Image (cartoon, rainbow, N blue to C red; front, side, top):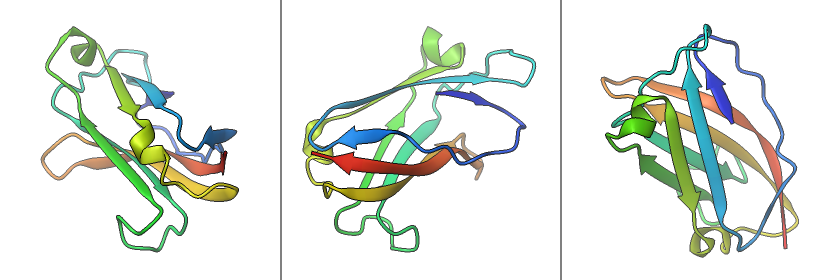
Length: 122
């Protein structure tokens, strides 16, 4: 997933997630001119919710966060997130979830970088 700053956000549906699988995400952060944006110390959160109006952490939902380390990748706008099977195993098969990626860069600045719907299969 490539995230570009200062653009309009269009919901994009993912094909599917397999219950019990490992999910791996590689994020690239750049300005609209293609210049890498440092994400060192920023927190990326991936949300999967059956009902977007339910409280965070509702039964059957998945929320996973990672703090990007202070390293060369993060300084060059690259971030990585791995969600292990212990979290995806609790998802409900044959259901459509709403997903969202947010990044918290500190100073009360939180941005939604991606959102849409995804089917969970077994």
